[in-house]
Length: 119
Image 1 (cartoon, rainbow, N blue to C red):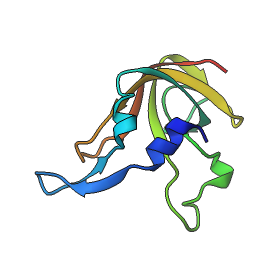
Image 2 (image 1 turned 90 degrees about the horizontal axis):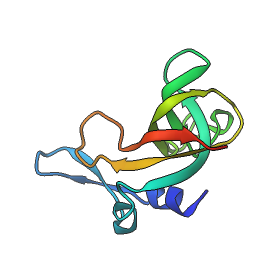
Image 3 (image 1 turned 120 degrees about the horizontal axis):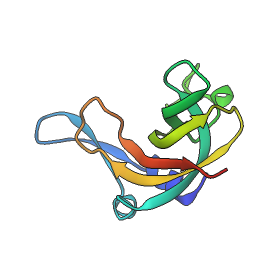
């Protein structure tokens, strides 16, 4: 868990002007929006295959998935990679531009755009 993952975990939810529950991010996290950041984590594929240009990055490996039984959904970021990233069940480090989505729509709350595998 890094400081940035901790900030993500501190998000709350509020009713917005459209009467939709939407994420509300800490001020310190909002200050990081549109900046290139590095995130350690685990690849969670959204489609079958070994190489992925879009996937979820989780703070926890799937073997420790908290919502597979009881508990809360672990923090995840939707990653859009410049090039395909090969799946691994080992920890990885991904670098990309952080985008926050506070709209309350059905898309992810966090995105990492133009991402690259760095480890």
